[in-house]
View 1 (tube, rainbow, N blue to C red):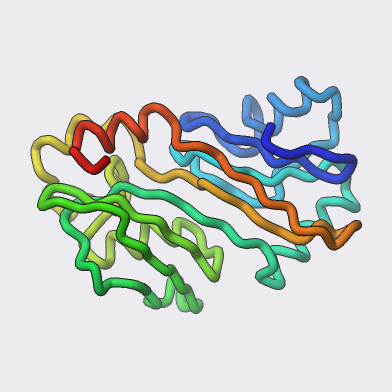
View 2: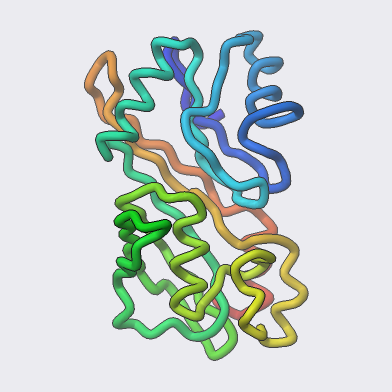
Length: 200
Protein backbone atom coordinates (compact mmCIF):
# COMPACT_ATOMS: atom_id res chain seq x y z
CA UNK A 1 0.00 0.00 0.00
CA UNK A 2 1.48 3.32 -1.13
CA UNK A 3 -1.27 5.61 0.20
CA UNK A 4 -4.40 5.05 2.25
CA UNK A 5 -7.14 7.10 3.93
CA UNK A 6 -10.88 6.75 4.57
CA UNK A 7 -11.68 7.29 0.88
CA UNK A 8 -9.16 5.33 -1.11
CA UNK A 9 -6.02 3.20 -1.40
CA UNK A 10 -3.20 3.39 -3.93
CA UNK A 11 -1.50 -0.01 -4.08
CA UNK A 12 1.60 -1.24 -5.90
CA UNK A 13 0.18 -4.06 -8.01
CA UNK A 14 2.59 -6.91 -8.75
CA UNK A 15 2.73 -8.35 -12.26
CA UNK A 16 0.80 -11.57 -12.75
CA UNK A 17 -2.31 -10.60 -10.81
CA UNK A 18 -5.53 -9.05 -12.14
CA UNK A 19 -6.63 -5.63 -10.92
CA UNK A 20 -10.21 -6.75 -10.28
CA UNK A 21 -12.39 -9.84 -10.14
CA UNK A 22 -11.85 -13.15 -8.33
CA UNK A 23 -8.36 -13.70 -6.84
CA UNK A 24 -7.37 -10.17 -7.85
CA UNK A 25 -5.57 -7.29 -6.15
CA UNK A 26 -9.02 -6.08 -5.05
CA UNK A 27 -9.46 -9.38 -3.18
CA UNK A 28 -6.02 -9.11 -1.57
CA UNK A 29 -6.70 -5.55 -0.38
CA UNK A 30 -10.17 -6.45 0.94
CA UNK A 31 -8.67 -9.16 3.14
CA UNK A 32 -5.62 -7.12 4.13
CA UNK A 33 -7.62 -4.06 5.20
CA UNK A 34 -10.84 -5.85 6.23
CA UNK A 35 -12.73 -3.47 3.96
CA UNK A 36 -15.02 -5.64 1.79
CA UNK A 37 -16.25 -2.77 -0.43
CA UNK A 38 -12.85 -1.99 -2.04
CA UNK A 39 -13.02 -1.63 -5.82
CA UNK A 40 -10.38 -0.69 -8.40
CA UNK A 41 -11.18 2.65 -10.03
CA UNK A 42 -9.19 1.93 -13.22
CA UNK A 43 -7.44 -1.04 -14.79
CA UNK A 44 -3.91 -2.33 -15.17
CA UNK A 45 -3.25 -5.40 -17.32
CA UNK A 46 -2.38 -8.63 -15.53
CA UNK A 47 1.27 -8.35 -16.58
CA UNK A 48 1.58 -4.60 -15.87
CA UNK A 49 2.86 -3.66 -12.42
CA UNK A 50 2.58 -0.46 -10.40
CA UNK A 51 0.19 2.15 -9.02
CA UNK A 52 -3.48 1.16 -8.87
CA UNK A 53 -6.11 3.43 -7.34
CA UNK A 54 -8.95 1.75 -5.43
CA UNK A 55 -12.02 3.20 -3.74
CA UNK A 56 -13.18 2.09 -0.28
CA UNK A 57 -16.91 2.64 -0.83
CA UNK A 58 -19.42 3.48 -3.59
CA UNK A 59 -19.42 7.28 -3.06
CA UNK A 60 -15.62 7.29 -3.13
CA UNK A 61 -15.63 5.32 -6.39
CA UNK A 62 -18.02 7.80 -8.02
CA UNK A 63 -15.82 10.75 -6.97
CA UNK A 64 -12.61 9.07 -8.16
CA UNK A 65 -14.10 7.90 -11.47
CA UNK A 66 -15.16 11.54 -12.06
CA UNK A 67 -11.49 12.57 -11.64
CA UNK A 68 -10.44 10.11 -14.33
CA UNK A 69 -13.23 11.16 -16.68
CA UNK A 70 -12.22 14.83 -16.40
CA UNK A 71 -8.50 13.96 -16.95
CA UNK A 72 -7.49 15.13 -13.47
CA UNK A 73 -5.40 12.04 -12.71
CA UNK A 74 -1.78 12.03 -13.93
CA UNK A 75 -0.28 8.61 -14.63
CA UNK A 76 3.36 7.98 -15.52
CA UNK A 77 4.73 4.69 -16.79
CA UNK A 78 8.11 3.12 -17.45
CA UNK A 79 8.45 0.72 -20.38
CA UNK A 80 11.20 -1.26 -22.05
CA UNK A 81 10.50 -1.51 -25.77
CA UNK A 82 12.06 -3.26 -28.73
CA UNK A 83 14.63 -1.43 -30.84
CA UNK A 84 16.29 1.97 -30.64
CA UNK A 85 13.60 4.62 -30.27
CA UNK A 86 14.64 7.87 -31.98
CA UNK A 87 15.20 10.75 -29.55
CA UNK A 88 12.86 12.99 -31.55
CA UNK A 89 9.86 10.68 -31.04
CA UNK A 90 8.21 12.67 -28.26
CA UNK A 91 4.50 12.09 -28.87
CA UNK A 92 2.18 9.54 -30.48
CA UNK A 93 -1.32 10.73 -31.39
CA UNK A 94 -2.73 7.87 -33.47
CA UNK A 95 -6.45 7.35 -32.68
CA UNK A 96 -7.40 4.13 -30.88
CA UNK A 97 -10.75 2.54 -31.78
CA UNK A 98 -11.73 5.80 -33.48
CA UNK A 99 -11.06 7.89 -30.36
CA UNK A 100 -8.38 10.49 -29.64
CA UNK A 101 -5.33 9.06 -27.87
CA UNK A 102 -2.18 10.93 -26.83
CA UNK A 103 0.97 9.31 -25.43
CA UNK A 104 4.03 11.42 -24.53
CA UNK A 105 7.50 9.81 -24.44
CA UNK A 106 10.82 10.59 -22.78
CA UNK A 107 13.79 8.47 -23.87
CA UNK A 108 15.81 7.45 -20.78
CA UNK A 109 18.34 5.11 -22.41
CA UNK A 110 18.65 3.12 -25.62
CA UNK A 111 20.81 0.82 -27.70
CA UNK A 112 20.26 -1.05 -30.95
CA UNK A 113 18.39 -3.85 -29.13
CA UNK A 114 15.97 -1.99 -26.82
CA UNK A 115 14.99 1.34 -25.24
CA UNK A 116 13.90 2.43 -21.76
CA UNK A 117 11.08 4.99 -21.87
CA UNK A 118 9.15 7.14 -19.44
CA UNK A 119 5.62 7.71 -20.72
CA UNK A 120 2.59 9.73 -19.74
CA UNK A 121 -0.86 9.33 -21.21
CA UNK A 122 -3.34 12.16 -21.62
CA UNK A 123 -6.10 9.70 -22.50
CA UNK A 124 -6.77 6.30 -20.99
CA UNK A 125 -7.68 4.09 -23.93
CA UNK A 126 -7.53 0.33 -23.45
CA UNK A 127 -3.93 -0.92 -23.97
CA UNK A 128 -3.02 2.60 -25.16
CA UNK A 129 0.75 2.45 -24.54
CA UNK A 130 1.02 -1.10 -25.89
CA UNK A 131 -0.94 -0.22 -29.05
CA UNK A 132 0.89 3.07 -29.66
CA UNK A 133 4.35 1.56 -29.20
CA UNK A 134 3.52 -1.39 -31.47
CA UNK A 135 2.21 1.05 -34.11
CA UNK A 136 5.54 2.92 -33.87
CA UNK A 137 7.29 -0.46 -34.46
CA UNK A 138 8.79 -0.40 -30.96
CA UNK A 139 6.48 -2.80 -29.08
CA UNK A 140 6.67 -3.25 -25.32
CA UNK A 141 8.98 -6.18 -24.58
CA UNK A 142 7.09 -9.31 -23.60
CA UNK A 143 3.83 -8.11 -25.18
CA UNK A 144 2.32 -11.26 -26.65
CA UNK A 145 -0.64 -9.51 -28.29
CA UNK A 146 0.60 -6.44 -30.17
CA UNK A 147 4.15 -7.43 -31.16
CA UNK A 148 3.27 -10.49 -33.25
CA UNK A 149 4.29 -8.93 -36.60
CA UNK A 150 7.68 -7.69 -35.38
CA UNK A 151 10.59 -10.10 -35.01
CA UNK A 152 12.51 -9.17 -31.85
CA UNK A 153 16.23 -9.53 -31.30
CA UNK A 154 16.95 -13.12 -30.05
CA UNK A 155 18.12 -11.79 -26.68
CA UNK A 156 14.68 -10.28 -26.06
CA UNK A 157 13.06 -13.72 -25.90
CA UNK A 158 14.44 -14.03 -22.34
CA UNK A 159 12.23 -11.19 -21.09
CA UNK A 160 10.05 -12.66 -18.30
CA UNK A 161 6.85 -10.66 -18.85
CA UNK A 162 5.39 -7.50 -20.36
CA UNK A 163 7.84 -4.72 -19.41
CA UNK A 164 5.34 -2.00 -18.47
CA UNK A 165 5.20 -0.42 -15.01
CA UNK A 166 2.83 2.28 -13.70
CA UNK A 167 5.47 4.22 -11.78
CA UNK A 168 3.46 7.16 -10.43
CA UNK A 169 -0.10 8.34 -9.94
CA UNK A 170 -1.05 11.89 -8.90
CA UNK A 171 -4.51 13.31 -8.22
CA UNK A 172 -6.31 16.00 -6.25
CA UNK A 173 -8.09 14.42 -3.30
CA UNK A 174 -11.86 14.83 -3.80
CA UNK A 175 -12.41 15.70 -0.11
CA UNK A 176 -9.46 17.90 0.83
CA UNK A 177 -8.43 19.14 -2.65
CA UNK A 178 -4.83 18.37 -1.63
CA UNK A 179 -2.49 16.84 -4.19
CA UNK A 180 -1.79 13.15 -3.56
CA UNK A 181 1.43 11.93 -5.17
CA UNK A 182 2.28 8.23 -5.14
CA UNK A 183 5.29 6.41 -6.59
CA UNK A 184 5.97 2.70 -7.09
CA UNK A 185 9.64 1.73 -7.46
CA UNK A 186 10.68 -0.34 -10.44
CA UNK A 187 10.17 -4.04 -9.61
CA UNK A 188 13.14 -6.39 -9.56
CA UNK A 189 12.27 -8.16 -12.83
CA UNK A 190 12.05 -4.79 -14.61
CA UNK A 191 15.38 -3.61 -13.15
CA UNK A 192 16.90 -6.99 -14.00
CA UNK A 193 15.75 -6.64 -17.59
CA UNK A 194 17.32 -3.17 -17.82
CA UNK A 195 20.58 -4.63 -16.53
CA UNK A 196 20.46 -7.61 -18.89
CA UNK A 197 19.97 -5.26 -21.85
CA UNK A 198 22.66 -2.82 -20.60
CA UNK A 199 20.13 0.02 -20.35
CA UNK A 200 21.07 1.14 -16.82
